Length: 124
Image: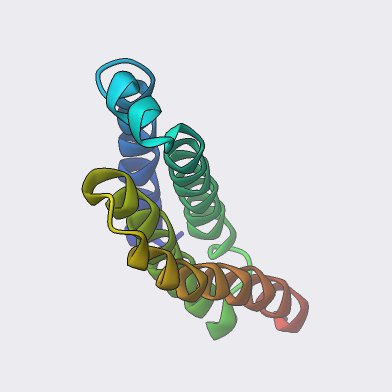
């Protein structure tokens, strides 16, 4: 198993729950005033998707040893940070230009899932 992906996946999952709770409670009025509640929820949700993907990759890497599986983990990690991070930045700063960064993260997420499928397919 890939310990790094398991560790970082667990940390990202915990942070997703914590940020989601803050968004639903402590930041609720601020997010509603900015009209960014849905943006914040999307960030927390995709952060959790990335975290779960990293946990899966950490486990699957014990069985599927192709390099694409490791590359998939790297792509999911980068994509999660960029995508969710850009959405969080929009919510925190009100600067909508961060929205131009989000598709880069989304592309990394898609590449990560495709690499995982290829890595599983190509493993011996």
